[in-house]
Length: 141
Image (cartoon, rainbow, N blue to C red; front, side, top):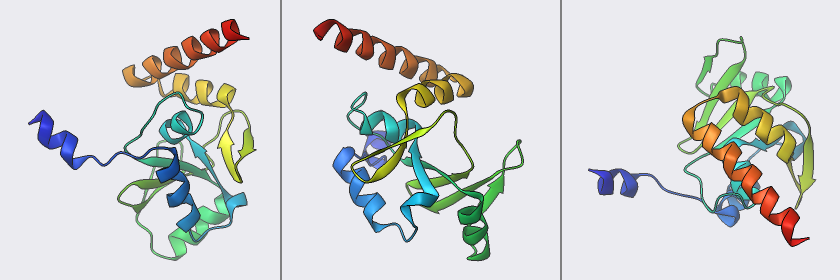
């Protein structure tokens, strides 16, 4: 069963994510890469199963008007299932973004903050992974 699950979950590396972002019909100023995609973008992980994006209220309004399926989360913000492997979260951001290779990505500090706020076991492990990598990089310098 584990093999079947692994087969069903397509993984994306940084180039795959970039290619997905290039096909989005949105202005880049209206969305930013967060969580697992940001982990891959910064090189903390080699792959992710999906791409989560934060988006402006204006883009969320547009998506709703276009009939993109969404759910209202506990905080009152909308979560849109744009495609099989892309979700957009209205106004989801902690910290700031940085532009890298033409795309807005939550900063590493913001990524850590978001992962801590999520608080799931996998997010806690991701925070440790990030911090350990930063420590290793600091030792190399």
